[in-house]
Amino acid sequence: MPGLSRFVLLTAMAIEMTTTRTPLRERLVIGNWKMHGNLADNAKLLAALRPATTATTSAQLAVCVPFPYLAQAAEALKGSSVSWGAQDISVQKQGAFTGEVSASMLKDFGCTWALVGHSERRSMHAETDQLVADKAQAALAAGLIPVVCVGESLAERDAGQAISVIQRQLAPVLALGAEAVNKLVVAYEPVWAIGTGRTATPEQAQEVHAAIRAALQAIGAGNVQILYGGSVKAANAASLFSMPDIDGALVGGAALVADEFLAIAA
Ligand code: PEP
Image (cartoon, rainbow, N blue to C red; front, side, top):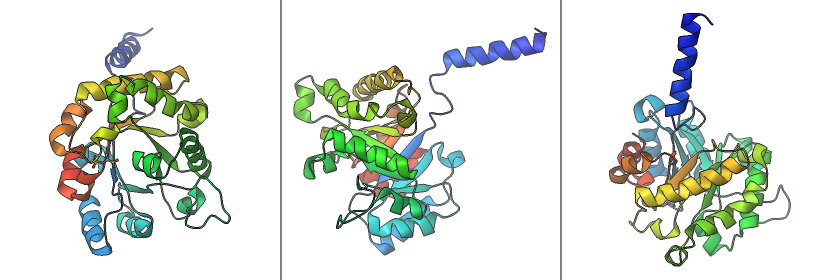
């Protein structure tokens, strides 16, 4: 092998060996607005996010907004690097399902993301692990990227069950197979850290992320992005993102404040 090619090959191998993150695992920061917002406040927030690019924030940015404001987000973010999505979808394709919104309706006007299985949906709307997996499949079938949220309660953590709960929640998702799973994003959101101001330590989060990564790897989907969520703010983002298996964040409260959200991404 000529000297230069050999050098290039060896350098590439060295980079491969020392890099924990592959190009597929770009940093991703998604804001979950939950049931907050109005036209006027949204317009200001979206206008402040609009100029963000991966060059200015070093992360891909997205917002998941309430259904009535999806069109506003689509319009305000058109032509920008910031993508947008919904906070839930129906598991059904179409039909007599009053109040539901299907994945294909969202895809129809340019939606990229759909959160599925957020803990607030699991607890307040009795969404089961299987339903969440079915919603992920419905999103994928319509060409949306599902962000599958998993997370244990405080009682489950205290009982030493954090990882087994996550494995149980993920099982029907993994059963969708590698091809499907490679197209989705997982968000680990310990329920006790959501909206409480109490964040998992980077080490606590990394332990669970590593277990999720191992489960994904076992089916050939080891490069799926795994986001951490739960009281992420600018002050704790860097230490969380320094962990090898944390690829970004799903941000609730702090996503409503443009400077804070952009600082998390930066
Ligand atoms: C969330 O709702 O997904 C979330 C992580 O909320 P917060 O950042 O407010 O804890």
